[in-house]
Amino acid sequence: QFKDGQITPKANMNIQLVDIKQDTSHLADVERLYNTAFPSDERAPFKWLVRGAKKDNVDFLACMNGDEWVGLLYTVNYDDLSYVFYFAVDDKQRGKGCGTAILKAAQAKYNGRRLFLAIEEVEEKYDNYDERVKRQRFYENAGFVHTGQKMQEATVIYDLMSVGGRIGNKEYRRLMRSFGGIRMYLITLRIFED
Image 1 (cartoon, rainbow, N blue to C red):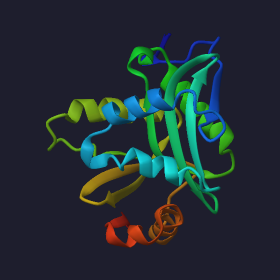
Image 2 (image 1 turned 135 degrees about the vertical axis):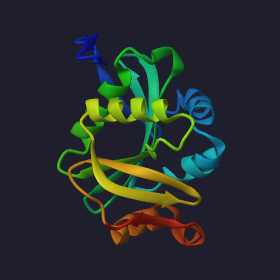
Image 3 (image 1 turned 90 degrees about the horizontal axis):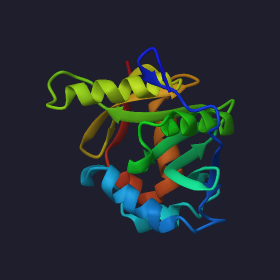
Image 4 (image 1 turned 90 degrees about the vertical axis):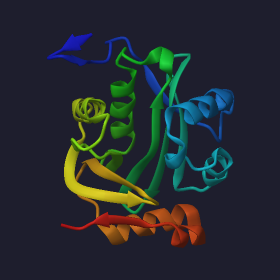
C-alpha cells in the first residue's frame, strides 16, 4: 500500500519477533540473508553473532509475518539503550511494508528505551547517494529521526537515527563492550559528539 509516496504495512500484517535461542528453524534463512544483505566490511562473523546472542542483553530475532519468515533483527541492549545492530528483510518480501512493520514491532518491544540504528552516511560524495537517501526516508517513515550524530565502527562512518533521543559516546562504548568484551577495545568505536 502506498501513502504519500511511501510503502505502508498492509493492515493484515501480523509481525512477530521470534527469539532464535528458542526457535532455530529459520537460522539457515537468517544466515543466508545476513551474508547477502550486508557488505563484508559491515559483517561480523555469523558464528560470533550466534555466540553473542547467548547473552541476556542480546536479542537475535527471526521476523515472522504470521507463519512466514520475512527477515532478521539483531539488537544489543544496555541500560535504557537498544541498538539495532543488524536488520534486514528477505528479498522476496521487500516492497510489501514488512520492513516498516518489523521496525514498528521493534519499537513496541523496546518501548520506553532509546532504540537506535546506524545508516550509511547520507552525503552527496557517495556514488549511491540516491540509494542512501531512499534508505533514510524508509527509516523516517518507520518513526526514526536523525540524532544529528555520526558514529564510527572500525573504518566505516554512519549517521545515527533513533526513537527516543540522542546517544552518548561513553554509553555507546559501554553497550558495545557488554556485547563483545575485550575485543571491543581493538576496534575503533565512537560517536562523534557535537
